[in-house]
Image (cartoon, rainbow, N blue to C red; front, top):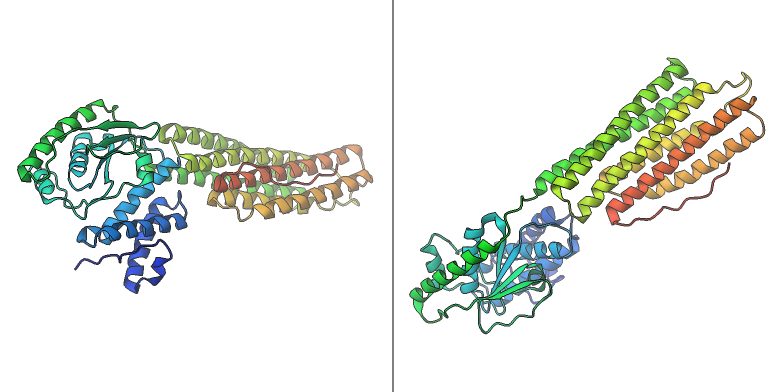
Length: 450
């Protein structure tokens, strides 16, 4: 027995009144659609289109052709068209839409013939202004004779997003008049009217359509290499992992610089400076590798808007990480150069500044890597604390607590280097906002002392 989705004349929230069995079917379809479109469209949009498609198909017919599998196929077709229209995907295959009044014979046959002729060079869809309940048996038999099966097809209504997504629209009904949309190529094919002519009439129609389809396919541009979504996802994960590792290396540099400043390294400040310097060289190399990889992916994969934002956010993040690393080299050099009197403590707040910087960098990189903004407000708040601590160091130095002039200058240089690194952490948080929301704006910052 084939389980049908119940007839519905209203979109959401009709699903609230479905039986447990139908709710499970609906949830399964939504979950599969979410896997394919979740990065591009909201869950609410998926639900809306599924419920509208269910209502549209089941309102017209309760036949087996409108079982859940066909509702899912119709919804998926509409969502792909919607994503294309909104610029969320790049599809190098032109979409050819065949339209007749009932979508039960001619347009279905033309689409099937086109798919066999064009292969991967184009996408063929069909629709009708007033779709019938089922395909005509004569059309199905005529196509079966030439090795094309249409048993898994069903009449579909012409929806606005599918019409808008089409690059070429072919009308096959002399009585059908569809509004002409800008930037679309229209053709009206005049073929025999097979109605009432039996199987032989549909054989003749098949022959006429095959000739027209062959001409159309011959005019198509050469096939363009397809962009593999799975391949792009793998590339994106690779770059994300590179950025994550780079972020961890910079956090380790902060920890090493802090230990060098405190004099708590067992190997001394000189060795601490060398370790920070060596780590900076590795970060420089990693930054160059990420930038080159991003350029390669953009050139070969041609990512769409959302994916391009993610790549650019990752690339800009590593640029800021590299600058944080440069600042940490300055911190380590300043710590190496400072020689305070034995009875003079280091400025209060320097250790706290490095501790804040460690958290800020770690949180900002995590948001970019996870494509979230959960830590953005915290990073901005910590930068304000960093500014306050820097102001305290400046006042401490102004009081002459550092002793000699050179020591005061080196400690000021050290504090400023940490502060600038904190600004780069906020810049990385801005990249997380850009990747997640598509917004390009500077996060609020306070003025600083010194």
